[in-house]
Length: 544
Image (cartoon, rainbow, N blue to C red; front, side, top):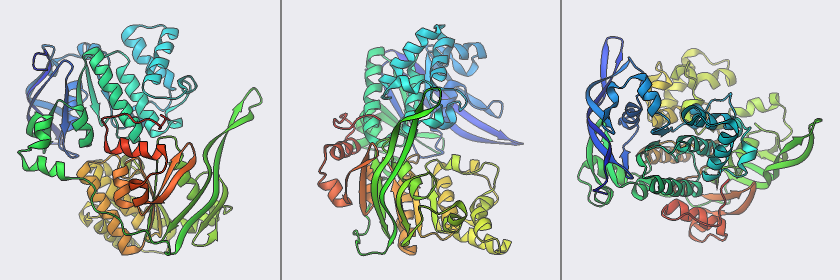
């Protein structure tokens, strides 16, 4: 590797942002290089400057609010800091590509997948419609999209989070770039697909001698993928070196902090005598497949196919499985947010036939924390408005002072203070936004909380903090959690019992100890193997 030619060199780079008359530094004196065929990882917590560094390379920062007070970015000898628009248009998407962290906000909601991936090929390579279509199919197949031809006409909202991220990866790799910037490329992916995508990226890198800048909070990914590591905090690189050296002999205290950060501890022992809060019997969610001029139903997609669920007071039921296995649909059905068949009982009362008006009083006691806190928090509302919104609906008789008191209490419970009430979501890190989302749910004093991938987009250290917070809230209030996640390490730390799903069905269920220590099915063993050892792509678990 030492003989490889340097492709990109960042020298003493600084970035600052101007708001009004105030200019604040975001990164200072950043220096590193990447050689052909090499992977360099930037690691650090939210707000450390990783993504700002990456966006500087692509010249995608919001100019003129952002500027470079100092430094150079030399790509194949050319300084990108001084590059004009025409040069950057020729480089972006062609010689340098980027996989963004949030596929839902990066993909155009108005365009189908074929058009979005094909556009890259037509703009940079001048491909015809038929040639672009063939290449799009090839790319979608490479990144693990099953039956890619059927997905060409799909819009982003019709794909799962993992499928959308795979489309982003296909777009980035379309023109075989010399440098791939991967900003949290596997955040939205389940563990088996994560392993497959990482193997794919390594194979493409080897075939094309492609350089890669990997930005991630997942240190397991860094250890398996990176040749060298740069550790960032507060806009500075505090340590850099070969991956083995960083992991085995870290020198800086912050690096040691990152390596020690992982969800720890274990939940209380499963209590099968605790009162049942939510229960389902033979729950089904089937989506009709319509074809022909008259749009007749010819088949069904069985997203949830006959599942029994029991969630008890003070206990956590973890739902695990690959993208498209039906995890989120199961949760939405239990919350009565999608149509379903089968019995659903809340606190012993059947609710599957409740109307919207009949469900409204129960919404106070049945809350949701979503995967993406940035997408689920309105950017136009202050934190006070966001956290108190449910109180206004469920408790219209409450005075403003009473609402504010409840909001302050909820924020303090999740480790935030009353001083943030008049700020807005964009002013906070990912971990802080997720705490705000949890506070919004806690303000209504619920009994049951469905959590859909609440830690997947967070740094490892922040994940551990959120797990500790959820465990503490559960202990204090006797909360029942339905915890949906592809991160088996978090599930193991938080859940008392686990259901493993595949293709809408339960393939295995039991206590957390049993599932993780004595898995009975090949599928469960494959999930666990992928979660705790990313060096090998597991067999027995199909991409979905």
